[in-house]
Image 1 (tube, helix red, strand yellow):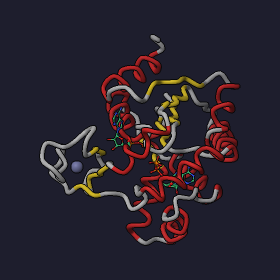
Image 2 (cartoon, rainbow, N blue to C red):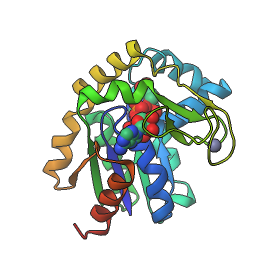
Image 3 (tube, helix red, strand yellow):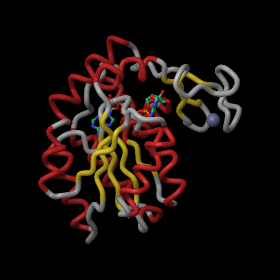
Length: 216
Ligand code: ADP
Ligand code: ADP
Ligand code: ZN
């Protein structure tokens, strides 16, 4: 099953992806995670990405497309994948269509997590991530049992440097101008499914799973 998650920053894509990949046993491909790893390692890709990520701007399409093209060719994607945070521009979506056509594959589902802009700032500024396993928490909405400690692996939680009020504003503007037009792109192909991302985390997971199983 080839799945794509769409939605503004803070909609819950990463949180839901963690759960859905476990249930459907497919790899989770997050371009944001890939950039953060490259930045931490200080690779040339990381240095390039940092210029943009630090400002809350989208990384240029050619850089981003290259990562996804390589990743989709790895063996573990043969039975399917979940793309989270890619594509984010029409040009990335066209590149993805080309990559998939070249592999004789296509997207099966595009899930759009709908969350009102007014909720996103609180979601993003309260987000915490595990340094060791990448699990996502929220200080109020999804707190770990022990403050600052990952409930899954005991790792230390940190706050992303772009989860500040100032950067969130830029990221939301980028979303509206460059990414939101993709919804019409996928709707035209009859792939788009809307899920209410404002509900409880477990309810959202169940609704996404229903869409994917086609029982909805
Ligand atoms: P995205 O990957 O779309 O940017 P995340 O999955 O990282 O979003 O979620 C953003 C923040 O909101 C995280 O702190 C997460 O714990 C929290 N969150 C995710 N889904 C929900 C939900 N349904 N209700 C309340 N908080 C949520
Ligand atoms: P979120 O969904 O919470 O906004 P991500 O982890 O998906 O965050 O992305 C973090 C940052 O990485 C983005 O603000 C952007 O700079 C960069 N990025 C991630 N995915 C893409 C993409 N598909 N195209 C361009 N830039 C991207
Ligand atoms: Zn952890």
